[in-house]
Image 1 (cartoon, rainbow, N blue to C red):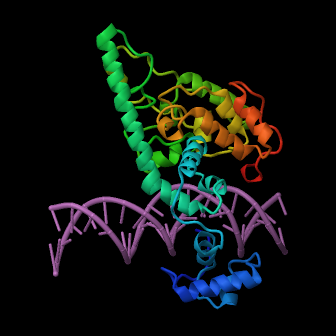
Image 2: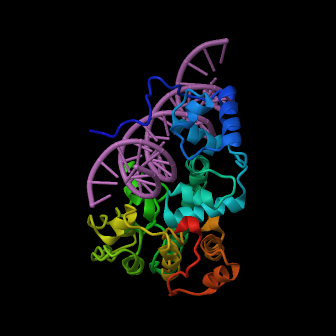
Image 3: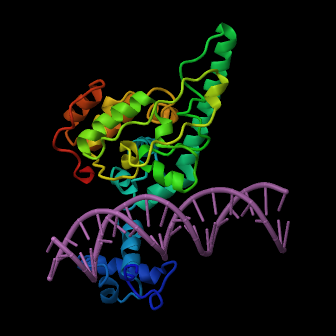
Length: 311
DNA sequence: AACCACTGCAACCGCATTTGC
DNA sequence: TGCAAATGCGGTTGCAGTGGT
């Protein structure tokens, strides 16, 4: 038995909004506000629409401060940086971009930015592949990490930690969070998470097998961590508090090839700038943000005064 | 000109969370 | 405390526009 629908879908209009409907909704909200009740609003405003539809239309299209299109490089970097960190939590990402809505950011990511990032990621992989083999020929040695490692071999954009489960369910790629990060990174991340999430105490998955040859670096990724592990709970968004993020990013050193330090690197220019942007999001006090960005590696938990939208 | 594939975006759907009683 | 309603959110869909053949 599912929940009751918010409105009678057979009696309300659906589909694209007409200019007249837009004007009705706009003038009503501007004159009366939403009244904190979107369900009753369409009737009061004389609209034959579902309250949810009205809310969506207002928030995503009619609000006076909305911007559409024309994303700047700075906005691109912020989106990538935050997507790296928190996954597809579009409302949080959009809240850091004045005038942008979650729907707009989501569409922009899915239609443009993701492709751009994937192209750069693949380009970087090819370059690393070339460098790797060139280096082998030159020295007979083997690179420690890099292109083709289990952490970076996914052809499509790797799902972020926070979105790994949904991306996997969408059949996006046979990539898992556990497969994408080095054991040390996973361990460090879990240590942070364990302090914020009491449930995050399950043991980490075993480290990937040492690669026997350079060819083995292109073998399939190791299996995802067992269900219920700390990482899975994080990936599923369970008991996840945004306040851990600055510390997580600060604690963990993400080498090239990992999401945080690898595929997005060309787009993010460098890790420091992305951290600065993240810091600015989390620390309203500019000095605190600068201190956090400047500090290296292990740091105490983030101070009070985080962005309200992120706590 | 007609058809097809692709793209971008608005809107919808269903689930999770919050709120009020 | 429990329940239902309202709201918020992310994933998905539908369709108009566009470009290629």
